[in-house]
Image (cartoon, rainbow, N blue to C red; front, side, top):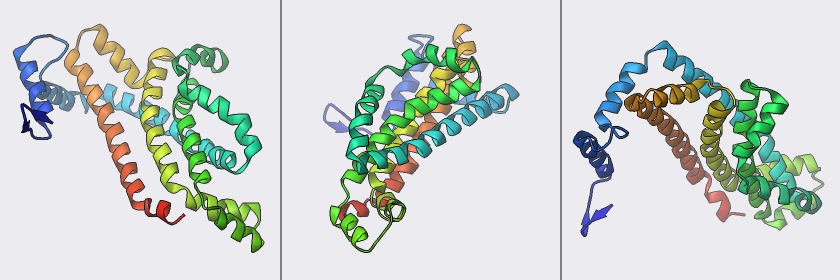
Amino acid sequence: MKLFGYQLPAMSSLILWEIVGQLEFTFFLPPLSAKFVTLIEISTTSVFLQALAVTRYAFFVGTFSAIVIGIPVGILMGKSRLLDELLLPWVNMFLSAPLTALVPVLMVLFGFGMKSIIITTTLFAIWIIVLNSRAGVMQINRSLIEMARSFGASPKDAFFKIYLWAAPPEILGGVRIGFIRAVNGVIIGQLLISIVGFGALFELYSSNFLMKHFWAVLIVLFAIAFTIAEFLAHLERRVDYYAARR
């Protein structure tokens, strides 16, 4: 970041946050140091640990379901023109639609429990995974597929030995973005469907104007999303050489 032509350190925005908080312009933005002190205080409480466990369970089950369903569907769409024409409009529609509007429908169909939260998380993550998996398959060199057919490879062999291995850069890109979208999905589910987990903490702290506690939980959420995204981005860079060899 540059200010008046001078290159500022990477953490300058955090320093600015601390200064603004210390000046007490607004109660909504307490100092950054106070947030970390509060985070240390609440991180060992049973309420926080239970909320973390509930949110973690819904997040990983929902994201795992999105990956297990989304990658094969995207690969099949990339392989089959008929299936692609049937499903692509629906995938694009759900990707661009405000999925929060579907939450009341999910509540009617699946109730107010953890199942609806997991399905909400899956719906937020799955569509970008499907599209990226489809894009990865469509970038595969057709000569690889023709060679496999000429050597008598079955559709199963082609799926596991060509499609699944030749499209990892795009697939990992979709999974990375899907994880980030799943963070939104699980919090929206916990706020709108059933007030549990981090959603319950956000509701409790905001209603009681405990902004330091509110931001402390939000920092944990940001840290989880950032860590997962950076790990998957690292994997993307490690397998990026596949794209040049297709």
